[in-house]
Amino acid sequence: MLSLDDFLLPGSTLWWVFLAMLTIARGLDLLSTYIATPNLRLEGNPVARWLGWRGGLITNLILVLLFATWPLLAISLTTTSLLVAARNLQSAWVMRSLGEVRYRLWMSDRLAEAPRGLPLLCFLGEAVLFGSVGLGLMAFSEERLIPFAVGMGICGYGVAVAVFTSLSLWRATH
Image (cartoon, rainbow, N blue to C red; front, side):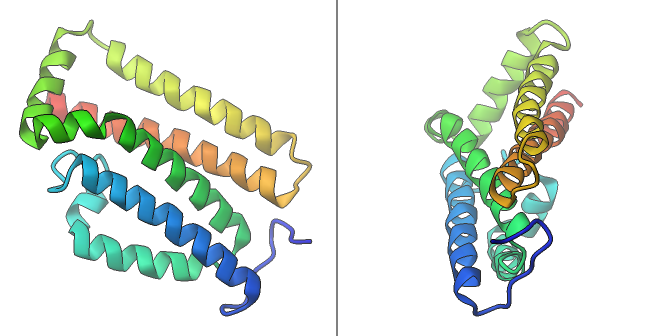
């Protein structure tokens, strides 16, 4: 049975399992991002925007090969990536139908019409609620690898929502 601090040798059977999980999850995150913002104009992560598609693919390939050696990180990143992909797909159809520029203008108008601070409060509320679920899983996992790592991934998603949404809101208002 794997513990939180176990590592796997590249090429081992479990390493291949974690590599497949990570590859699918990171691939879905990238695919959902591409569906939503093919030119990365709406990408909330400034590093991903800077890397572009080619740099992002290469970086993700390297990361999944490395992260598959640590099951805790592999499960956590898989969880976070799947949640990010789901969130991307939630609005991707609107982004794609309006186009990146029109969607950004539409969203800026919605932000300007909303009571000051309400969008940030709502997004931070989402982050805290997800983080609470993740922390609960971690706290009651009794340090079993899978529930702890899934909880860690949910917390990671909460942090990502808080950080990247705050950055996007700041960019949209400045």
